[in-house]
Amino acid sequence: MRNQLILALLITLFVSGCGFHLRGDSQIAARLNPLYVVEDQLDSTQLTLIRKQLIRSGAELAQTEIRSNRLLIKLTSLKDSQITRSSLTDVEIVRLSMSLMYSVMSDSGELLIDQQELVDSVEVELDTANVLSHEQVKNRARKGLQSRLIQSMISQLGR
Image 1: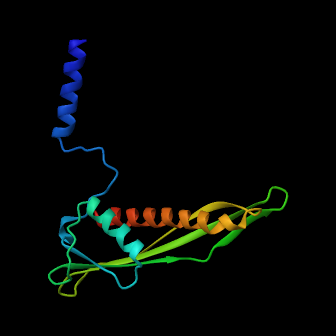
Image 2: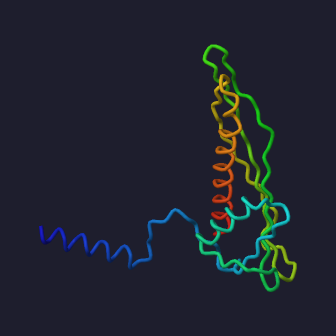
Image 3: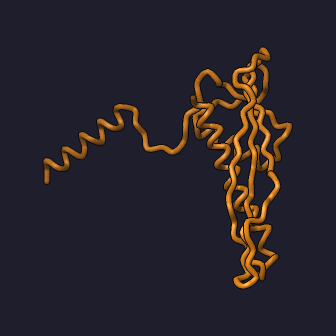
């Protein structure tokens, strides 16, 4: 029992000592810091979500674009498409799609990362007998899509 405890302690020390951390977040490449998030094409909810995930990923966010790299982001909901509808089960399946376009420009105007586009989609099941809940279901799905797209962008910024 004592040997197992010592072995577990050694493994724990080794894993934390080598720099490995059980984290889900990617790290922003140091060459991109400090980052200024250009707000022009984002609503306040999107901006807050982006800033939180960037900070969680080790980004140094600047309050002004002076002497900072500018991160330009545009999140767009694409047209919803109906996959199937069944009047027997009162179910409709709709695919929601979203696009995130981003680029990074240095304070001198040099393009550090060309414009990239990420697209993701999710299928949601809507109860046709309860039409009032459709927007709530779609909004939750869109928030999840936004979060996944932002995390994908951060992962690419870490390369």
